[in-house]
Length: 367
Image 1 (cartoon, rainbow, N blue to C red):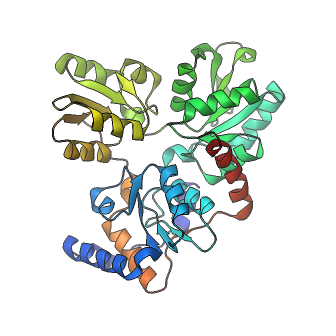
Image 2: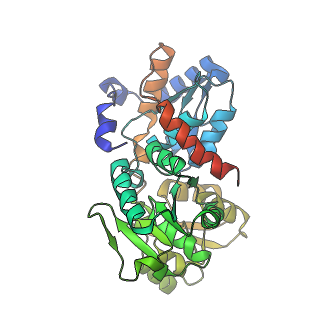
């Protein structure tokens, strides 16, 4: 869903919440959680602020939280502290009696918005004319429900950063080519890891409706949608060069949403879960520069005080859209819920949900 569509559905936070003290807001959230008990479930994504994550009943990545929400049969209300596509996935996987709520509808995702369904349908027509029935679509779970449904409709599947390798390998058992959207970097890094050379990957620019590729398109095995994560793309080769010069004993670990050049120069790369587990298991006294979202990096640093953990980019800011979810918005939707009013409900239409679930199930069957 585009930013404009999100804003059109957004209920505005009353000004009175901005005047409340943090202790007062925290006390009121605790009170409401106690009031609802098991009927209320608050999943919190790893990238959320500490002021929100402290109230999470579960923390994790987007798909993990959606699955946990679906498995929580007692929860009537799921207040998802993440971004819009995550809440959509939770709604797709949960039952009809469960209501998913997003505290702030402005919490979108620039990467997800880079794969618009109209652009995708137009591109697919071009690909079919050019390649025939030789291409299968895969989408990162960081995408809209409409894009997940598109993949479900055309025999494709979703992927996570943890299982992208397995899913790309599966895709090549189905068709000789694949379309990977919306994040070109995860697609490129993963395909390269399984042996696809860079010169067999062509970038599709949905704005210009054309390929950015100088080779023979007949030789292209992977079509990469020209999308990216605005956070992970800010980690640069220069960041690594500076760190190698000034802190040569520091290991560098990055997320595969970073550019191919950054991933190749890093000591290690992997999903959010992989990064968390790697740092948890790392020896005391080790030093780490981490190429992922700042709220998580700071939380890892605070948690593992026996290690030195910093951001790979010293000027990095937290994810702006993730940070839309804050304590005032969380309290507001919870108080309205207690009053019998559902603010910012997330509901995916039945056809889109059905097709999206096909794409998700194809992935989960191979998890």
